Amino acid sequence: MKALRWLAVAVATFEVTAPERAFAYRPFDGTDADVAAHHEIELEIGTAFLRNDTARFLSAPALVANYGFLQDWELVVEGHNAVELESSGGGPRLRLEGPGTFLKSLLRRGSLQGQSGLSVAVETGVLWPSAQESGVGAELTSIFSQRFTAITLHLNVGNEYTRSHTYALFLGTILEGPEAWAVRPVAELFVEREFGERRLASGLTESALIGLIWQSRENLSFDIGARAARGQQSAEELRAGLTWSFEL
Figure 1 (cartoon, rainbow, N blue to C red):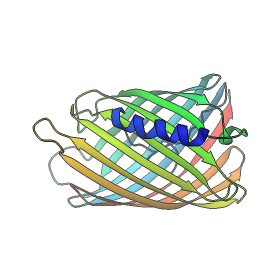
Figure 2 (figure 1 turned 90 degrees about the horizontal axis):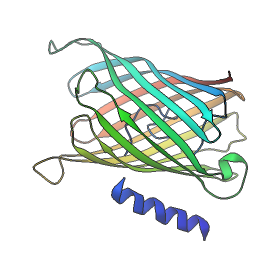
Figure 3 (figure 1 turned 30 degrees about the horizontal axis):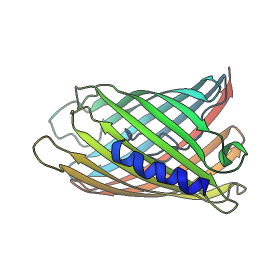
Figure 4 (figure 1 turned 180 degrees about the vertical axis):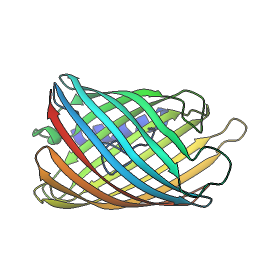
């Protein structure tokens, strides 16, 4: 019953709360209901090749830095360097995309922390201007995670005030294979709707990702994933990277 109550909170949060998607938990767009340990730094470093209807891009590096500055709290700084492989002549080929600064707090210790029930966290922060968008935005995301023997589930629900000053809703689900496996299969599904100023909905995006995570050591993992998106513009993406954590 407690789990059902938390899921009900998640659905309600979706009505008033969507994250700026970076590789918040490699190789996904979403994240999990966990934070870096106190005085621990967790680096997520990756690269991605993306092809859409008009251009091809290489993201190298994509970087997320997490610092556990207090018990159950972490500071997150992220962004990636985008290189346009086929120049369209409309702008710089090398540019910074997706910069943001966030605070993430663990609200309830649960199965991700070795206890029972749902793990619950919230993440909020600022979306800084990028090469493509000069405005400042903000986001608030609620995260719910549940680990079972055979599978781990993560639910992200939230809202985003975009850099273009529109409003977007986001709902994402991550599925992971057994934690005991050294190499576990993973998948992610998400949907995002952006609301424009003059019409009810200016854009709907649906995306799916499949991949693998290899837990090489307790503090080191490698990942690879393939993602396809459909909406206002179709895109295919291949991601690869690593996550490394260490104490200060």
